[in-house]
Image 1: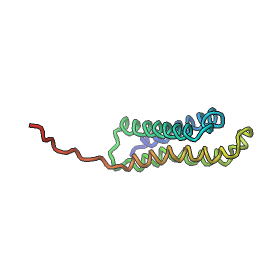
Image 2: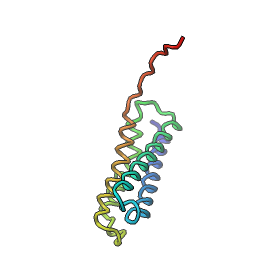
Image 3: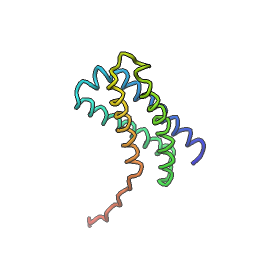
Image 4: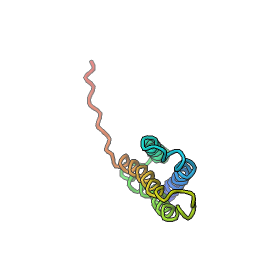
Length: 133
């Protein structure tokens, strides 16, 4: 993997973490945490968004499948490190937030990164031979 590829995946991961965190800070306590189903739906949509960004970067950079784990590590590293730091300091940064929001923010981020990891290691299904004549 080239340095440019590494930079692209690292910056994409940083930007997607910042966007997801800003979204959670803006809408978390008032909207996302209002009901379980709304929270779950938004966690799912965030996971889909993060996964689309990752796979979009894979396609743009035209990486071969054996390089996906390295790309994944570079993509999630900023979010895992900064997400943990944000969770540790969330009540200091946003004193009006309920301390329960720390766990919910962590779960929100874990669902997104777990979805990306699952899709990165997923094997492609082989196409079946066509029986059309």
